[in-house]
Image (tube, rainbow, N blue to C red; front, side, top):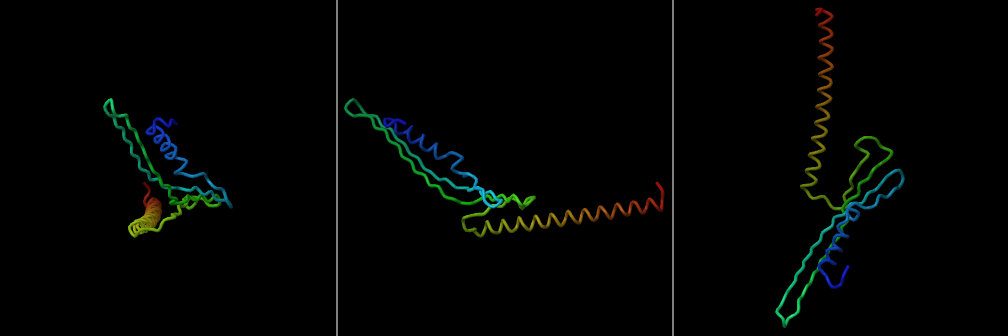
Amino acid sequence: MSDSDPINSTLEGILKVLSMDNVIGEPIESDGKTLIPITRIGMGFGAGQGQGNSQMAKGTGAGGGAAVEPIAFVVINKNVEGPEQIEVISLKSQEPLNTAISEISELALEFLNEWRERQKKNEEKREQMRKGLEDIVPP
């Protein structure tokens, strides 16, 4: 980084902060579980440059700011199989809309699973009826 070029120096610093390693943290192993921290990064940046006439020197300036906030952990439980193996634990309070969407999606999933079970049972019944008819009336 060059002190004579504050715009490039600031941009290089921002690019370092924008690294994916700063959003998805290093995994933490503990008791058969892997914890992966997730953060939110917010930033702002501004730059300016001026020129003058022969009696006035050039001016250049840049500035930026960033904030990093932990928002969740992804937990991978190595002792569990299936979709329950992965869980997301939010570190932020649930807003009412997010809570409602989450509950609706859980209900929809339960409904879908019940519907699949019913379809499977109905198909089994149809198959039994076909076999019963074939025993009575040969094809």
